[in-house]
Image (cartoon, rainbow, N blue to C red; front, side, top):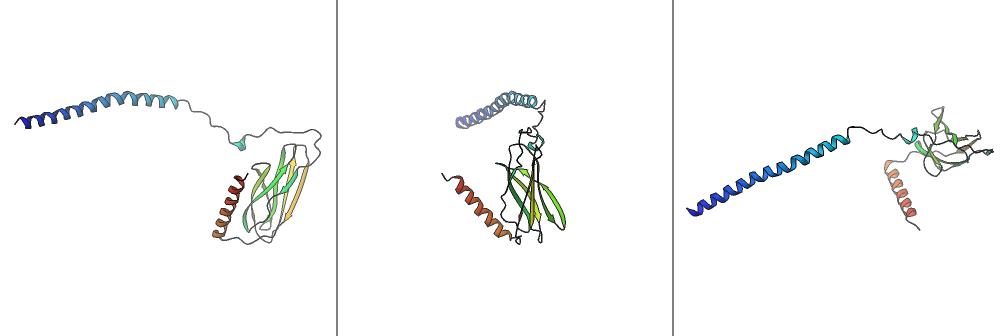
Length: 183
């Protein structure tokens, strides 16, 4: 009988401790949760103005006096496939560029697309070219009014299947990483 009583007492003792433990945990966690909720509410009370997009913040216009030379245009794209292509051009000039565009014929109409700056004075445009169109004209002008146009004639090749395109991209990525880590 004594053994049963001890077991009952031990069971009651654990039962009491478990309830007490729950109350202590609740008493400890309640202020912590309240403090974090208040801190979170304070942090969100005044929303910050988001920064402007890079395209919306124009760079300071740079005008070099006595700049009579037109921008230098170097067409980097060596081949074009039927359909959409990324057309790359390097344009350098002492003054800021005002005009950067690429012209080509698409479905019998002249298309003019803007060139957007990438890195190292490289500009890109997404062009959609179909045969028999084969000439792409690039026009660049600086802040002093100097203009230049350059063109290249391409042999438009048929679109590649998706597997060939994926393998080509993987090969380009491998070459990129090999060049990146080469001393």
